[in-house]
Image (cartoon, rainbow, N blue to C red):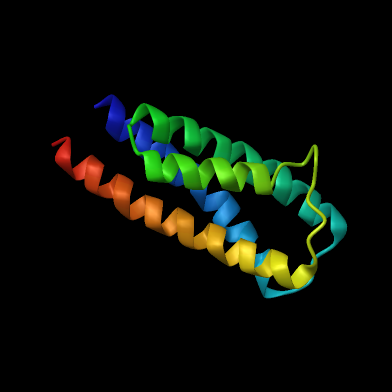
Length: 110
């Protein structure tokens, strides 16, 4: 049952950055939005990487660790807007991909 509650928590945690990433990719936002986006995404992706490690999902671990580094707010990468849009859509795709993978895991715990 612990695994199911962990997966549910991940789904809730993924919802916030996924919505923020859609807004970031869709149109220009104020700089404060992007700062908040970095903090939220880095925290959620780092948590997702740790959870992936615990669940022995190494592909998800690698993807979320890379995304946590990309979105880290302490040492930001100086990418231009067009490249960030690609990164944003990739991050959204990674969340959707992981949601399906973890959903499969949750179904197997019945």
